Length: 95
Image (cartoon, rainbow, N blue to C red; front, side, top):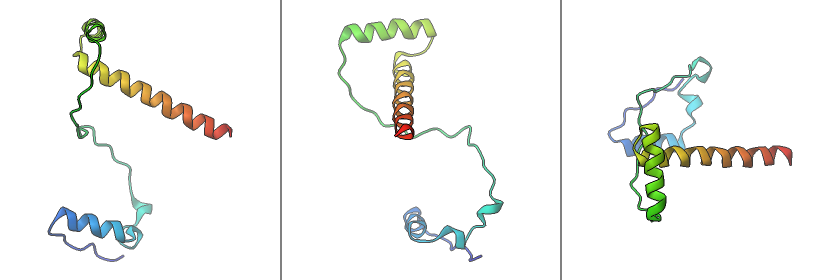
């Protein structure tokens, strides 16, 4: 195995790994899967225009679940995205 070089910047390391064959540096057969339970995803603020009535309905639903309405919107979006991805995957598998 080759020795992994020391990097002075994250950009330098990123460039290295984009071009290098990791199997020359890491024995992946000895790798173990690890979870990162405390890792928070990067967030990006967006602006979306919704009818006021829809926002009020979201607030009512969120209140019933005891969560902020913006969190409920993220939950709904995440569930719908998963449904769409699974639907597309199953259609491809059938084709």
